[in-house]
Amino acid sequence: MNYHWNWGIFFEQVKNGDETYLDWLITGFGWTIAVSLTAWIIALTLGSVIGTLRTTPRGWVVALGNAWVEFFRNIPLLVQMLLWFFVVPELLPKDLSMWVKQDMPAKEFITASVCLGLFTSARIAEQVRAGIQSLPRGQLYAGMAMGFTLPQTYRYVLLPMAFRIIVPPLTSEFMSVFKNSSVAFAISVLELTFQSRQMQEDSEQGIETYVAVTILYFVCAFIANRVMGQIEQRTRVPGYVTGKH
Amino acid sequence: MIEMSNVSKHYGQFQVLTDCSTTVSKGEVIVVCGPSGSGKSTLIKCVNGLEPFQSGKITVDGVSVGAPETDLPKLRARVGMVFQNFELFPHMSITENLTIGQIKVLKRSAEEATEIGLKLLDRVGLKAQAGKFPGQLSGGQQQRVAIARALSMNPICMLFDEPTSALDPEMVNEVLDVMVELAHEGMTMMCVTHEMGFARKVADRVIFMDQGRIVEDATKADFFGTPRSERAQQFLSKILSH
Ligand SMILES: Nc1ncnc2c1ncn2[C@@H]1O[C@H](COP(=O)(O)OP(=O)(O)OP(=O)(O)O)[C@@H](O)[C@H]1O
Ligand SMILES: [Mg+2]
Image 1: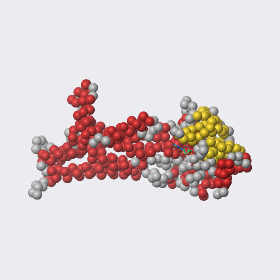
Image 2 (image 1 turned 60 degrees about the horizontal axis):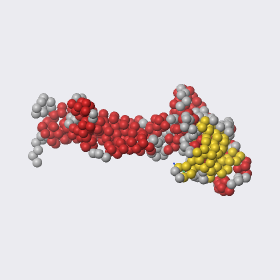
Image 3 (image 1 turned 180 degrees about the vertical axis):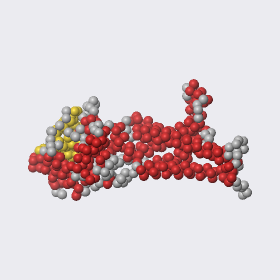
Image 4 (image 1 turned 90 degrees about the horizontal axis):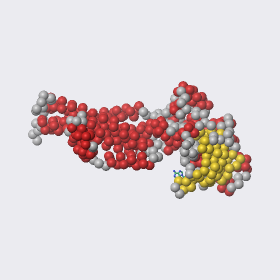
């Protein structure tokens, strides 16, 4: 193998422009974080609501929640990304469709964030449901017996414990969001994977490029893990042993 | 205070309660006993509407529990309930457990609620534990906190569902003592329990249930003296023998 190593490549200028390759990667890193965090906010919000609804006594609400989860969990993320980008705009009413295709600002970014957010929301909904249902039924009774309404019982009694219980699976979901955001390259979001492919083609220094990208993704996942670890520490309940109370 | 007439409940085909009728007057203490699966928990949960029932009528302080127009949360706030597994809220300190209902349901100020909560905690002998969490207390202590929590809402009556059966034997009495004291103060109480010593000490009447029916509803003297049904006699001899 006579690969021409060049670790200085990051500081060289790109072929057609006055940016360096490092600038490209930094841009990519920025978009990766933007897409991931936006998607995470969407996912956490929707996932919590839908997961909670799936534990309520209303049959049709539960059915709707289940359908949501099955739909977004059972189609590959890449396909969902393409569907949202190429198919959904065609299905909108004519004026709206035109606006989305031609004038919508940050179209790629919004589509990618929403798509990844909805996909992840289904997974979070599943965890929230499992968390709530793992609580002893007596907790619901105790909340209701205090005179709380059902929403109050969820707010003050069930959800605070359910979320504590599901911090570990949520941690890996949070890490997955960063990793899954790479699929956004398929609709030309200038995120890390997209930028790295550009850099590789432009510079022909594939190994250096992907080593750098690997490190950047690793850093994202690592920080996500640490953040969740902190949350777990801060919300720990003194004397509480999981599965027993 | 509590009136129950011809209450029946079924899960699908399975009949849990059949034609249950009884009354609990103000200041009365009723003990409910019976074999496992006889419907005691279900009956007591029907009283504050935690379990719905299909026919019959229950009124608590004149309010019909099953009526669709009844504000159940409001009614439940006036009925204290204590569970077999304590069911304190594990993520809240003892003080928070004692004040959350007062603050969110009764709209008391935090200061007032804390003052009332701590007074009740002192009353059940646990003043020193105010800052701890439920997981840091023994079962007996948790159950006493649970009683104090129910009392913090100024209930008009109290429901107990086997409050001592999840406890280690040496902790049973500390909880029963609190209940006896409550009974002596004139609290209206409906207690599912197999603690016949407790029944002897404070019960006005004893209800015996079997297979979803109230088989015996007698004064304490009659129940322990001459239980009429054979099932009740067998049951009594079984529990009293150990
Ligand atoms: N959700 C439910 N679905 C179907 N059957 C149920 C349900 N809940 C309770 N049951 C049945 O109803 C019957 C009465 O239950 P309940 O808990 O009231 O009995 P219990 O007298 O309190 O018994 P224990 O002494 O074991 O607490 C039991 O046979 C139980 O299996
Ligand atoms: Mg029971």
